[in-house]
Length: 208
Image 1 (tube, rainbow, N blue to C red):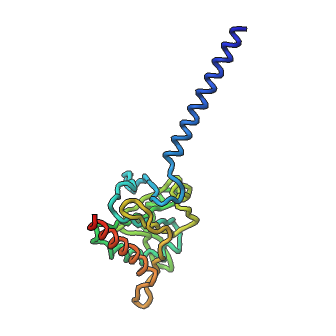
Image 2 (tube, rainbow, N blue to C red):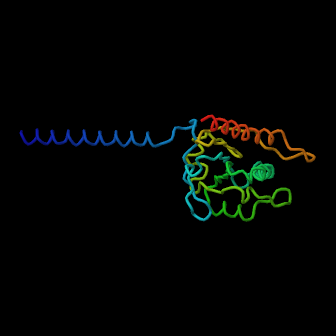
Image 3 (cartoon, rainbow, N blue to C red):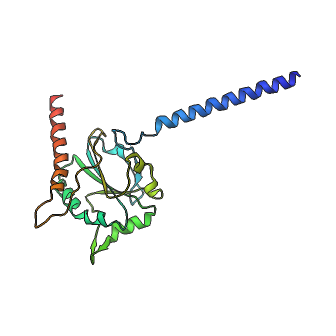
């Protein structure tokens, strides 16, 4: 009888400890996991084509423009030219960084796109260029947590992030191709959004 009571007592302790451990693990996971669509940028850790780990935290103090794309994405290709001109516009501005994130689940497909571009209307177009830091979510692809964090339904998609990691715009104006040599209203508003933030941030820094 005493033996059975002792066994029941020990079993109760084991169950209690397991329950306590599970609760702690769950609590830790909830604490670490970023809240979807919060006001701060997703703390990504992704690799570039050379295997170097690049973190969102590496760009604190910079305005970061993230461009999401996938292979065989006609709208991504169509908008690559105006985005390239925007990157060129900020080339000498060390406060602005461009990052393109490929959402294909095959890293080889991504690297091939970087090297060889894609063909649209009988001409080769490149999704991005050397003025952007190219990263990949492979092998997770579109199922990487970053897409759910930003409530993404498809591409192309851009996120503009401020110097303290705050999200400036989840859906900024779409930079469209020029017509008759005239820059599109979307491209102008896209740049204005960044420029206004830089000016405002500079004024705040002077006040401090």
